[in-house]
Each structure stands twice: as structure tokens, then as C-alpha cells.
Image 1: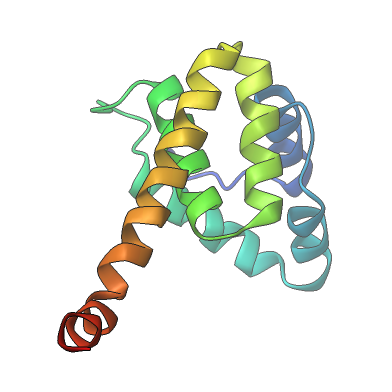
Image 2: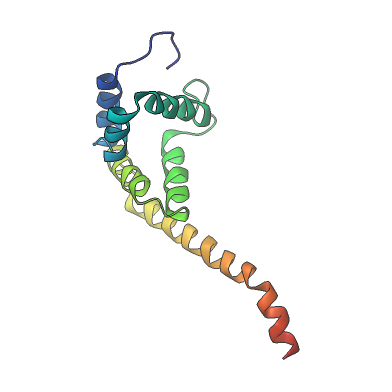
Length: 124
């Protein structure tokens, strides 16, 4: 979305189908009930992942997005990024390592969050 012409919903869906292998159900629904939210979503995507002069390659972007979706418990985003990873041909080893990193980060969070409990346990 770098030019002034706004793509149609069908064009957006075509791009999603090509790059992700599917059109997420939530995106299909938002286009029906609030088309402006779909365009805001695209604007936000361009802000987060600039199409011109990107610092990260597409595979890395997909893995980061997948990790965030896993950590945030967003089933629909995990599904979308899993589909996108398949279309991109990201190897299973990279997907599994991403999953393992997220699992470790969440486990580490639990240990960090338990610090007040550890304080009490030290004095018992």
C-alpha cells in the first residue's frame, strides 16, 4: 500500500491467498462487518513490517509473528502464520525451534513472576 490507490477487498484477499495459502476467517468477517478495520489492519501491517527497505527478511518476520502469536495465545494468528510458513517453505526445524523458544520464554516468565513466592519460601 505505497501508492495512493486503495486496494479492493478482493485484491487484499488475493494477496493473502497467495502469501498465506488461505484467508483467515476473522479477516473475512471483519471485511463484511467493518471494512475500515480491514484497511486499518493493513496500515498497521505496513507500519510494523515496512514494504520498502525492510530490516528483516520475510522468513524472520513470519517466525517473529508466529512467536508473538504463540506467546499471546492467539489461535487464529498461530494458524495464519503456520499457513504462511508452509507457503514460504520454512523448514520444520525452524518452526519447532521457534515453538521451543516461546515455551522457554513463558516458563521463564512463570519463574520470574514467582519471585514473591520464593521470598516467602525462603523465610519458611
